[in-house]
Image (cartoon, rainbow, N blue to C red; front, top):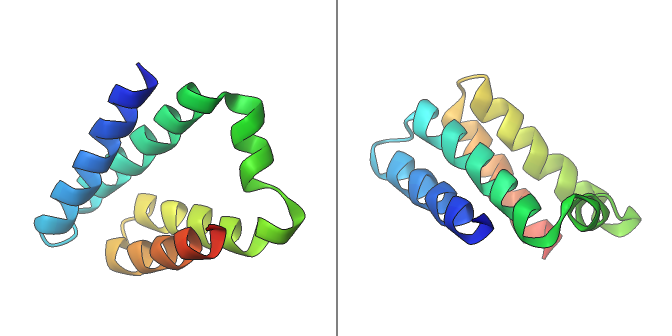
Length: 89
């Protein structure tokens, strides 16, 4: 179930990007992706992954980008998410 939810989340993020940063699709994709990640590795490990001391900068940019997309600023939110994603890894 987790892999399917994560796959749908990635699909909606890509589809929202192709449709000129449609904020509703991007927000839905973000929520599905984070939910699927939590279902795959568990809530405790997801929380532990995002909130390690050396990953707080990437986490803040990634989750801040998710919040910005939810507030209907999709272009800025996606740039913040991409920077946060690369900072996490």
